[in-house]
Amino acid sequence: MQTYEVIIVGAGSMGMAAGYYLAKRGASALLIDAFDPPHTMGSHHGDTRIIRHAYGEGKQYVPFALRAQELWAELEQAANVKLFSQTGVLSAGAHDCAFLQEVRESAERYSLPLEVLTAQEVRERWPGIELPDHFYACLEPASGVLYSEHAIRAYRELATASGASLLTNTKVTSLQTDGADVIVHTDSGSYRGKKLLVSAGAWNAPLLQELGLSVPLVPTRKTVAWFGADESLYSADRFPAFVFHLGDSMFYGFPSIDGAGVKIGRHDGGQAIDPDTLERTFGCYLSDEGDVRAFLETYMPQAAGALRQGRVCIYTMTPDEHFVIDRHPDNPHIVFAAGFSGHGFKFASAVGEAASQLLIDGESKLDLSMFSLSRFS
Ligand SMILES: Cc1cc2nc3c(=O)[nH]c(=O)nc-3n(C[C@H](O)[C@H](O)[C@H](O)COP(=O)(O)OP(=O)(O)OC[C@H]3O[C@@H](n4cnc5c(N)ncnc54)[C@H](O)[C@@H]3O)c2cc1C
Figure 1 (cartoon, protein in one colour):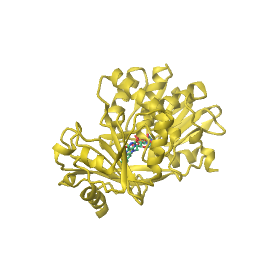
Figure 2 (cartoon, rainbow, N blue to C red):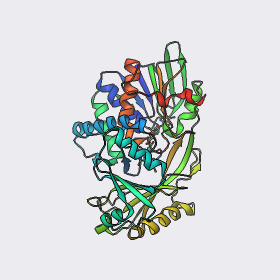
Figure 3 (tube, helix red, strand yellow):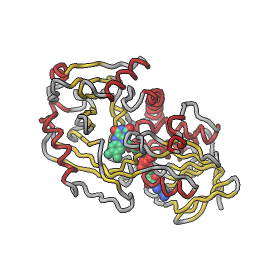
Figure 4 (spheres, rainbow, N blue to C red):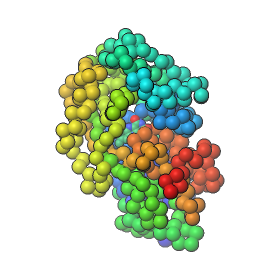
């Protein structure tokens, strides 16, 4: 049986990034993925992801977001491919919106550029937005859009060029510890690793269970859709990515990039699913199109054109919507990165780097304590 210094189970957003940082440091790494990343079966497809720095989900994320942004820029350089568009990100909500309050406090604490705009200022600056008077918005001009599939492809090419081994279309069927080592069984052979990273996205819970870890993860069906839009209002050279908090719901979206139309998704809700039997047809629920079209008709009416395309994707939710990045309590050479709860992609570069540090150095430079598994016990 071949032995590797590190085996990575799941080479998607987090795993592929970790593979790159491990290979760059000279570790012998084997990455195993059930599909051929980037692919459309997990959580990273649909072209784009928003990156924000002033963080409404908690200002503790800001150093993580800033490190991630630095690493995305380094990856762009190393791979010589465009991975980020600085469109700015506009967050909007009512005057008492806790998320927006946290965005403002994050910006203040970390001296991040942020413009706070009244509803009227928003309507004047972006005539494609109908914002009610009891709303306001925060524009983060330094934030924007990441090209998620290009990013995974870039990590893949650089990781393998640096000596990492990658097995695609190979499903990990079970994991077992053997003394200090880990044995990874797949549908086409078994491999021995001195260390292990489990980063299998929506499939993490059963794999972690095999290692005696109970991690509260709920894979959830989510959809995104692209709509024909008035390019003179919504094209990426004049319109930001956006996040709208409507009290009982939250929508996010992207300007029309290269004429693709406005892409939009609903962040809250979705159906708890098994990723192996997930209904992957967009439109099989009326809400797939209905929810986002209703949002556009109200807030961005000239972007509510014909449905151009729709995609089904997976969020893996934790109870508090914060991530779980930790070491196995009894086997510190096993690290896991899970539960990215619909807002993880922007951090994938920093998660990959931090996971590589946990595996090689035993600790990461960024403080990961808020992501510990023990918070659920
Ligand atoms: C519609 C949608 C919109 C989103 N928007 C944003 C956004 O704007 N900003 C943001 O920051 N985040 C966003 N996210 C969240 C972000 O994309 C995810 O948090 C992130 O991609 C999760 O990464 P992951 O590595 O955990 O999963 P994945 O990227 O899915 O990787 C997991 C990998 O593990 C592999 N795998 C699973 N089981 C096995 C097995 N048994 N054997 C081998 N391999 C296995 C899979 O094939 C897959 O490649 C969004 C997600 C969705 C679905």
